[in-house]
Image 1: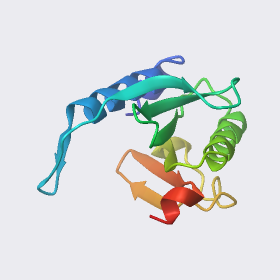
Image 2: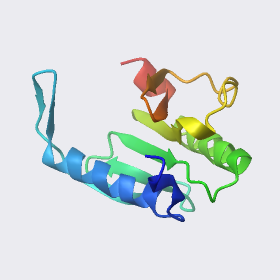
Image 3: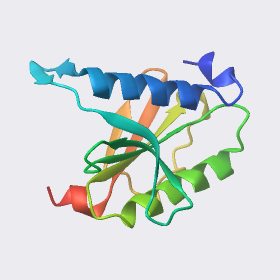
Length: 138
């Protein structure tokens, strides 16, 4: 993980493609088989000017993804994640914004004003997940 953040601008796109493959092909978690569903990449929001990273073909679930790399300004990166949260907050179907930060760049207070819904701690990275209000009600 520490080495992949050194790739200039590419690992977020790589991660998006990997997640797209998993969502399309299906997977097993704790004996639950997710059958897979067709997802589109870079789908346009209704405002016509911004795009969502991954959207299912029925347009019933939207995913925004951010992955921090060493060549990005950390404050700008955090602001982009906040922008993603605002984007998913304006749609009326379930959506999540996900950010992945390598442990060596993580600060204790970096997302305290965002109040993530889930935090996944790993030895080398942390994943923060924020749901939109529609998904919180499900």
